[in-house]
Length: 315
Image (cartoon, rainbow, N blue to C red; front, side):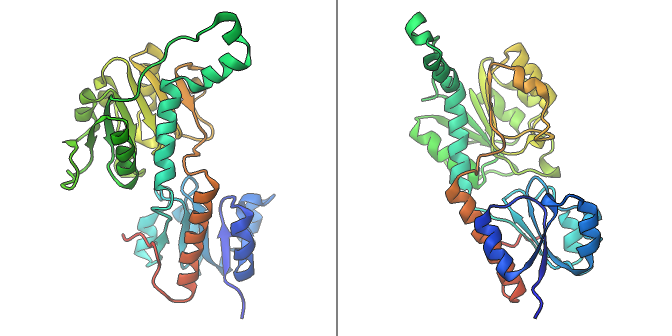
């Protein structure tokens, strides 16, 4: 019996590719010298897409795959997958939730602590000898006990809030609806939340519904000297307004793991000394990436065995 053929959109580690190669015929679009030629040759036989959140799967691509039966995303965000197109044709879309929640929340706090306590600058202070020449480095700012606003109190937002409780922080949040099972103050929009927090962390889902969610009004409503952290999607934020606020010092500090147009981000971010940058790596631990791959493979195996999918996203 012929093995199902999969179109692999983005690079995956060998610990995922090796076992998948035993079960499926893999067409690695990301590694092809001529992606268009590869796609033209294999498109009629493709029965599944393996993709990543930042790559997705467009309707134009999927229209070329007449045997397509599943889109399996290696990651949580599926905003770049045309889910409406899939739903109209009964093609399931899966992702890998839960397994990356705690690592993303860790990264949110790593960025917050790193930029507030100036960890990269402290490392440089020691390495280049300024500690010996100039003694103490300039003072930094406290995280403990501050007022935190979480934008999006889903799985990751809740994990961030749990960590914030350990830091003695006063927590508030914004979202589409109040959560009756949490003790935190609720505000319906980021703009309404902003005046009540000294630190804002964006944990909202990506997609059209959250495009520009943290808009100019929200950014300008933050108290002077606020800290902003984003481990969500660059699309959730008005980047022009954010850059202006950072340039002018109205937002004192920012820790950013995600950007619009990544990896070709706005070059101004790299010129700002009050920003700590990361390359969309919040889930980038060995443990989480192994768990993500295992869950993605479980969804594929269930689909081709005609069994219920572990983490299908319902329309």
